[in-house]
Image 1 (cartoon, rainbow, N blue to C red):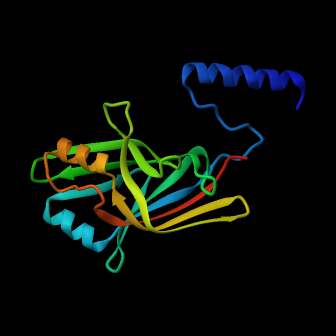
Image 2 (cartoon, one colour):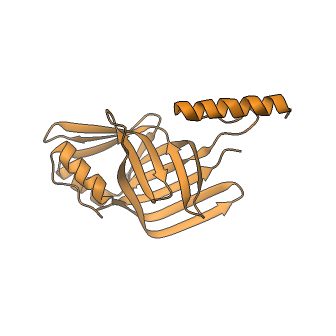
Image 3 (tube, rainbow, N blue to C red):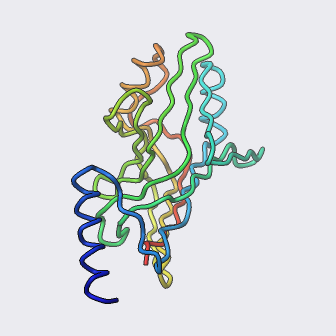
Length: 194
């Protein structure tokens, strides 16, 4: 790469940082990729349904259901710089998450979903806000593996974060959510940009 191109890239990156814009991957590089699969177990699914609570992954996330394992939302990786083994960084996820309380007729949609590796939380920004809310915490048996450039995380349990429980109960006007409540499990596959 010649000196002028390096200077141009540095100026563009500095301008993007000053404006709060994420810089795109280099034209000759590969963007970050992978997915995070949040599995809502049958027990939590049934308890939530009885309470009138429904959680729905929205595009670009996809949803599937199995009678034996429950409801799963697959959220594509859209960016991020992180190391699961060194526990730093953040992995940005595409799609949104809609939660509805059919009894109170209240709802909230979370965008800008991310796995914050620093705090080990899945966070989301409620529409109309700029502040991320910690929603879920990977727990249980945790396994982190690296195979080539692919980093994987599996968590046998996925718990409602206490701050997320308080936020959801307040926003949906329910008393269903509690900190540490088991939702299901989590599987993340992440390939950093190169």
